Length: 256
Image 1: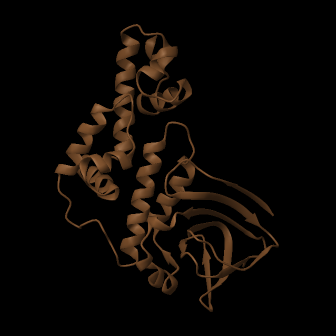
Image 2: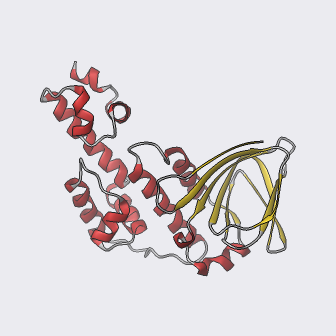
């Protein structure tokens, strides 16, 4: 059995857990958080509300707070899983009943978004991307369980106002929650509206504009060690990674 767990800085995620279970069986227990689980290898079998359930790699599993459950690997080679424990207020208590009735379901786009959040959470300088993933994940969960909070018809105004806010905070940055409070739109609404209007996430837009600023600083003769902070990146490796991803060359090669 191997396990790693940590408390991320992302608001709304209480704990991240990655585990490879081979022989351990969890007894009946309960959490005060929402348990959002994906299985990478093997399968899990558990009891929830006196009913036997199970999940494998193609499913998303959501277990509600304060409802006891157990868990054991249901595969000869064990189980590899990744889990987010979400703060209780990230999803309404109105969803608990629907979650008990339908705790595991197939939703490939949602599963991909959860996996993407696992990849980016905790990476320096990627806070806005993590926030965007979490907002979209929680909204997709609400919609899946019959309680959507984002209207189907999305106007263009929220996206354009968010773009202006990102431009005003290009170097300093701004969190999605801060932008949501400033613009008086739900975070998930902002993310979905922005993607529909511009074909990219707010984080992708911000990074692309920071790369654009970085190349101007380089061409203006700024030393490479100061370009990262001057264009809003966490550090020079952070700048180099995104600069090369977008332009195909490193900042040093771009300078020539």
